Length: 161
Length: 251
Image (cartoon, rainbow over all chains, first blue to last red; front, side):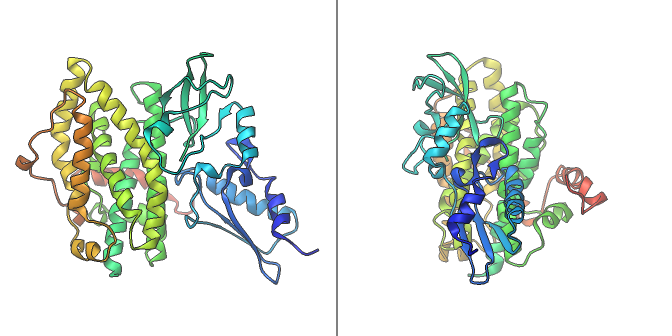
């Protein structure tokens, strides 16, 4: 069988963010490229969400394990800032999964992070926009903590970046 | 571009992040409230990650592996500012240092994101977004506490006065300053300082805190050239303790 980029991306759907198990690395937007050489060598390029995210190394190893599991032994997985991640790269499907998981998806923005964007969050439980940022640092580097003034619950948001 | 000048710049960026990251991590388990414990711990993680990004660029330029560079040098080989190595002190001092440092760092990253030296530009473009959250955190607390009770204002004012000579030394010029500016690597330390000053003044104006006359302050220079306070070496000894017992240990 000849390997295709689409085939590899389908395999990588199996690899989930260890801290947000509903989200695949493809939906998270950290897979920046897949190349297959004439000899069948597979190169997967990745980029970190947050530079200090301790899960990135784990995800890289998980990609390698998944390729091996499917019999792809000739592979290279690289991590670089060449095509840096931003939260707009989270797919529509990924956003839906995040919301169902109880985590507000990052608001889409025009890549100029101003204070309004950082403070804005839509409650994943009742869809209210009447919310307050409580702290920009949550249980993981990629989450901030907010309070919904309507349904009066604390919730977390995947930070816009 | 002169490679020594680029390495000098990368070392000072990386070392500042590593050492302040370590200091921030010392708040884990000791924060005055849970959210602050988490905030300083998260910023520690971010900063260690930022140092890794810069040490990786150094590694690509022929320097040793990031872990080796981080864990095997002595104080005299570090290029961090003295500001970041000072002990955490009370929460007011840590908060003031965080406010002064991260406002400067965000200006530096913004300038470096436009750098003519592409590897630094890519990393800075990524990191400037992350540091925005650090600045948001610092500015929010300074505005809240700096306009609150008499004790809070007195404590912050005293820490501000104590930290400023060290903060001004964040902008100690490199011996390659002119070359870096001429090559378009970034606008240089004087430019970073001027923009930093505007930003911290805008926040302090909303509080009862007073910025002392900067002209009368002698900056505590030396850090960029390997001169450090007595606090750095014990920090390094502690940080490298596991690495020194077993360099191949994974944890």
